[in-house]
Length: 262
Image 1 (cartoon, helix red, strand yellow):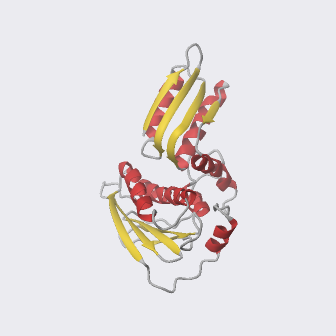
Image 2 (spheres, rainbow, N blue to C red; image 1 turned 120 degrees about the horizontal axis):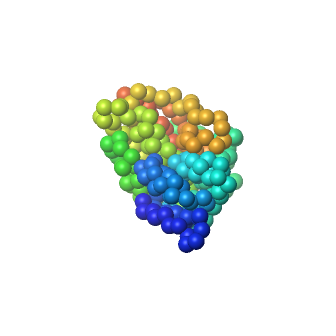
């Protein structure tokens, strides 16, 4: 991700122009630079998101942190230029904290199909596996690889973005919470296609996790929304033991019928 932070001449307002993906790989550096700008006298912040292609719960954490810093000095935070997908994710962020049962879908028909998925009774069409070292630097490339794999399966762009965010949250949890402290962390993503759904399994070799939300119940808490994002954006989310020794997160999304409009 690229970003720069400029002070507006003759004012205490700074503009942060962001480009690329906002995730846990970049938020620490961005937050450090924002902190330096605030210490240098910035009292109001405009976040230019017009070139941001991806945002997950880390982005909301950044916004919450900025809000906490600016409110005591009477400052303001303005989000500008987000595309429809990024804006929708940021709006969903606050909602899922107070309404964990909320999900998102591109249409009524798609929502109903996702809710009524039957138990699997047939073999998959194909499956692919991706292995990665458990490091935040690898998250973006794996997200993009999975979306490329799914690109020919008839998903609307908005559905692909939802899958990308849910997968990103599962990967981030695997790296942040599932990876052993000794640096031996590994993560595997299994992508399985059926004629009526896709299944993504994210496995790690950490200490294990049962999928229970452990974050703060405060809507303004800076983290702890990843699981709620997964549940809101996918049709089914399940947690199990990983064959690697840690946790397996299973994400299921209804697949459009061949020939249906995107």
